[in-house]
Image (cartoon, rainbow, N blue to C red; front, side, top):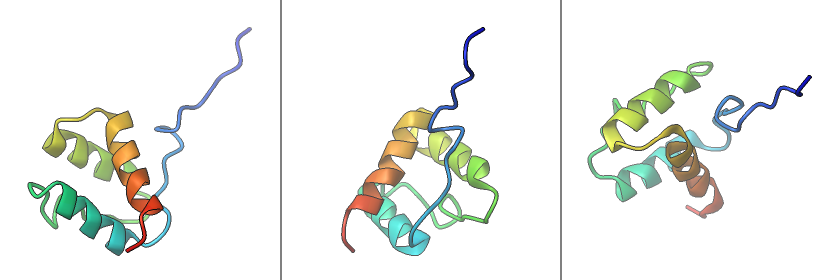
Length: 74
């Protein structure tokens, strides 16, 4: 029997200051709108789906882009 492994995409949660992170994402990806970046607690999946569609990127790429904003000082 193989152990079940969860990917970082399945475990994805928004952490830190989403307002600051979303501003950085908007600067990096000007095609993003406020509606694209709207986040509600517990609806991370919806946010990821919107960003994937808008940016034409896969889940991993979107999660990496969001994670990268957490590493930068605002």
